[in-house]
Every structure is written in structure tokens, then in C-alpha cells.
Length: 134
Image (tube, rainbow, N blue to C red; front, side, top):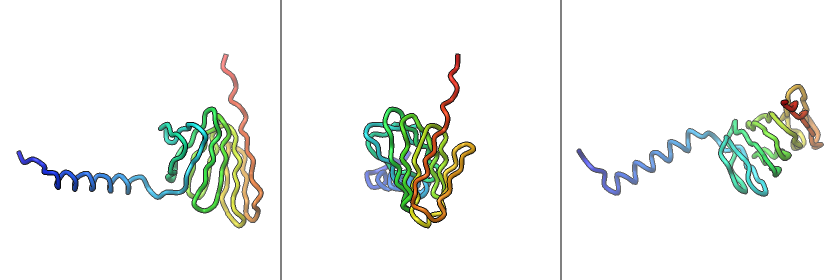
């Protein structure tokens, strides 16, 4: 059975890294927080890169999401949002969605919809707390 030499092993690692990088999709922005938060169920400290369809979930601290197109979303504590290149879905908690003037993005939170066709005013959305279970 043939063994890999150092050059063959290096080539194999590089091919694997390139394949994984292509599978993750395009970078759409960054998320930053004081402390930890979760992105796609992985705990992150400080900041991370966001890919299309990422789920960002905060716990005790808030998080700021900055997308490449200038869109910004501040997620409050105990909040969760799914982030796409062209839309953001607030699934839990509260967030402030700020779209640059002329942006056509939308924020969808359950039955609440905020659109910013020509304004720089932020859209503030707060979902009701889930009912307590007894």
C-alpha cells in the first residue's frame, strides 16, 4: 500500500480546504458581540464571518450584524435571527434593522413586516415572549 509523502499530504489538505471554502458559500457580512453568541449552533466569542442563511442567536449579550450592502441589525439579548444576503428573519426576541437609504431589504418577524424602500430610519421589531409553561 503506497504511503503519502509530505508533498502529497500537503496537496491533499489544500484540496480539502478549497472544497470546504467553496461549500460554505459567499460571505455576506460579520457579527460582533461583547462576549459569546451562537452562529449555526456553534459558540463564537467576539466576532465571526456570516454566510448566506446563517442563524445568529444571542444569549446574555446583544450582537451587531453588519452586512456587505451596508445593512445593519442589532440583535437584543435572548434573540435569534436567520440572515440571508437579501433578507433577514427575526425568529425570537428583538432587533433593530437599519437599511441604507435606497435599500430594498425587508425584515420579517412572524406577522410583522417592515420595509425600507427609501428611508434610513431603522425598523424596530420585538416579538412577544413565548408563553410560560406550567
